[in-house]
Length: 90
Image 1: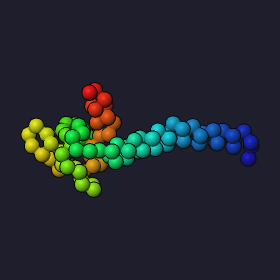
Image 2: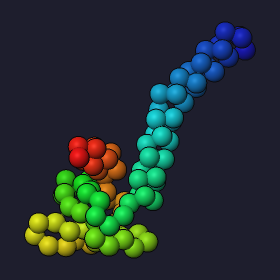
Image 3: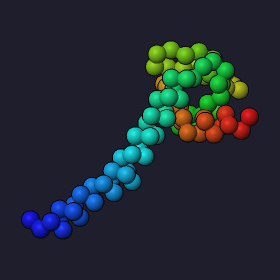
Image 4: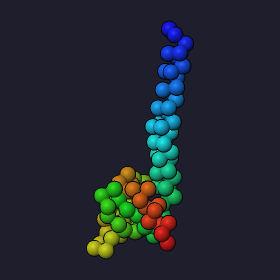
């Protein structure tokens, strides 16, 4: 094999890692941190766009208070990115 080809291959893998894998890992870490620090009274937005406040927290579910009542949702359905932006507006 030509050394130029090997260098190009290594550079392509490095670019792929820095442009795709690193940002995805950062987003996953942000979501895990957000869910771990969630407490009653926090405002959240689901990935479906439903706004509400956390009233109860279980291991994998959350009871969310909305204007029309309470909803039991999975933690995985909370949009960490949108919820963080919502809470920054305070």
